[in-house]
Image (cartoon, rainbow, N blue to C red; front, side):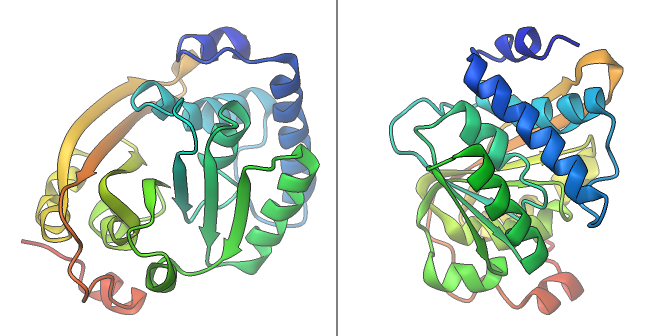
Length: 234
């Protein structure tokens, strides 16, 4: 795969410096992955397609070119989609939160290696972060870390009114329908659903974009134990 050409189809022109950052990212990810479980995907071509390219798809579905957009990535793991987006869009102000300190340490080391001044990685559970940064971000992203009705309760409280919650998922229409009640209750409204395919037949992806149309009730998010035990359903 020619990564530069494929990314260009998404409307992103990669500079030599940005391409070098992806190379540094890949090598450091593989190095740390030998001692820490960050990804099961380790072949270079697959990492570039299933992680890097996959993370950048949403840039073709929402405008990230405006100045000083605030984006929060919930449960980013090894930095997807937030780090690839931060590399390509230096105008983004990216906040990454993850509940595992080891992953945050990896991400902060990565941010330093990549010399990214527009990213911070913080050790927080999403439900706790909502207490200090409620309705603070224009865009909140999450990439397949839980079912959509669970993700929505963790993410929508962080989204500003008129902002967007963007979920990157596989292809599960039942999961999307299951979340409709939860989304509405938390102040969201479905905007668009995009189905797409990764290069080289490496899988299909679904991007669901929700607008934040009203405030999330103050009683949400609940504790993660409560969310997981009793996800919001109609």
